[in-house]
Image 1 (cartoon, one colour):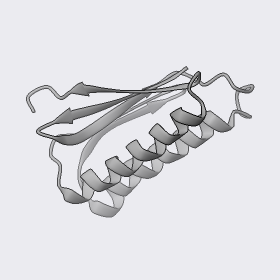
Image 2: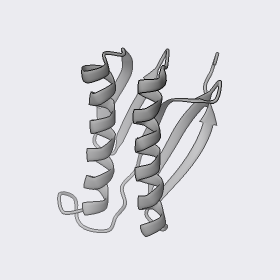
Image 3: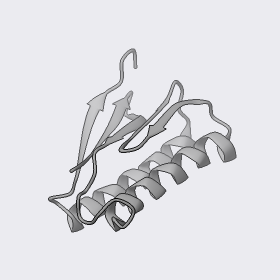
Amino acid sequence: MIRVKFSIGNNRLHGFEISGHSMTAPEGQDIVCAAVSSAALMAANTVTEIIGTPARAEAESGSMIFHLSETNEKTESVLRGLELHLTELSKQYPLNIKVIYGGVKNA
């Protein structure tokens, strides 16, 4: 199962952590994993490269961590868009994607 944890502090999204695999198809053919990975990378790249907000980002096979030390309306919009996209995917694939929320340290 893919587990997506959004970090919330001061009523704003500060980032996300994604881990796991959907197991709906063999590696390299899994459209659910591809959809989640593509959406997460687009959100992270939009925030850092287009908006220009620095972030801590780490990615490896089966996991991605993305956290902002500061947020603004633009970064919030991008992360809310990702949240909406992944929440809708989790409705289509409830056995394969789980979206949860947690607090941000020092938020």
